[in-house]
Length: 179
Image 1: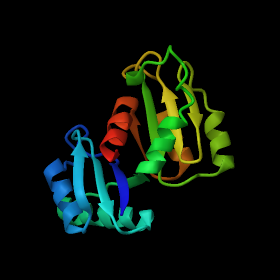
Image 2: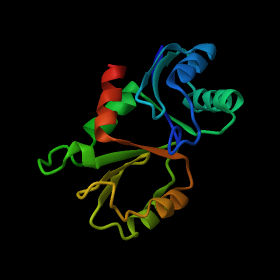
Image 3: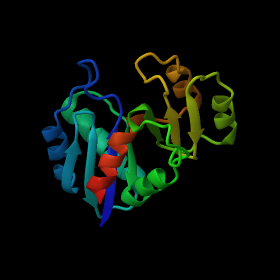
């Protein structure tokens, strides 16, 4: 059994793309996923599946959401082991000055490649600090996300792959749920 952490993009934000978490759990159960559990109202679900094709699992959940809820939401999946690697690989782990509530991780559906990452790295993002792996982008917002001038839209366009962000506290909670 594979344990997956599903991260839905752009649900329940500003009254758009509404999906109740009990509906999300029910959709997962209907798809044959084991023990679906949700966290918060922002589209986080942990479940088991015998399927090993993560892209196929994500696609089936996307189709189910579209059919049942009437909108498309990209679904980015990580296994429990991959989420553990995200936490263990944080470039901010040893920094005492980093407040967890001001750290976010963007999870990408695929590695956009070195050329694309180079374009993102060239963008002006100060005072924020950004580091990445192939499929994750860690961004620290020293002044919080509320007043940031971080070029989210430009980064999103440059990456050319679905992504969705979670704050560090949510990342840690999802990892704990995946236990």
